[in-house]
Image (cartoon, rainbow, N blue to C red; front, side, top):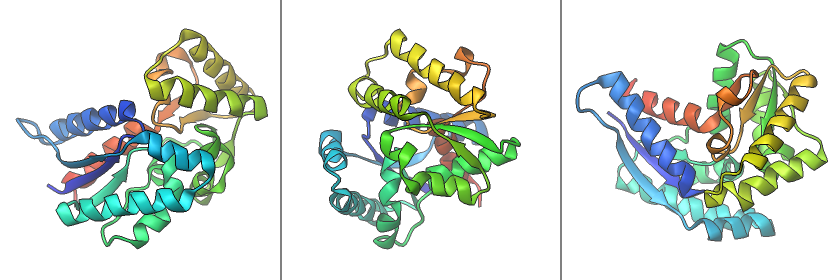
Length: 230
């Protein structure tokens, strides 16, 4: 079994989900008392969020690269960055290590295409929704990507940082997300990517008829499968 190097804490709320899902998948794959070999480095998210808000992506890349190097030195066979937004600096991190990074957007695109999805809505932080680092991976895979309007982008982002990252789950915010999901459906989306690892804490598949693709679940399952399959 390969050892998974997790860079977590962005936020710790969703990192607990990664740990649980990876181990559940390993148990399903191997049975018995099997569990995952995991090295977890959990950051202080306040530090990382400060770099995000100030646009200092170079500094965040430096911090996460140093962590990835430590995980590699400790014996990790590949890296999983437990957040969508910080994949913005995945190329810079990859340059500093010799083991691969399992990219969350590529893992999600593969799953969407396997299920015959061509046009997909994307929810996430404002960085994930509006910048190219994430959407380009989806476009390269042949997907058409829809995002909310400016008001929707601002509200989705606010709820992530002001509520979900703090573990604050509000029904009013769920209704806001569901209304935005309906707008994406009306615009032609066949499914919606929950492109922030916290959104799955708020919105569940049972809340809407439109297929939801939770990137946390997809990423964690792919990581577990990579750990046990050549």
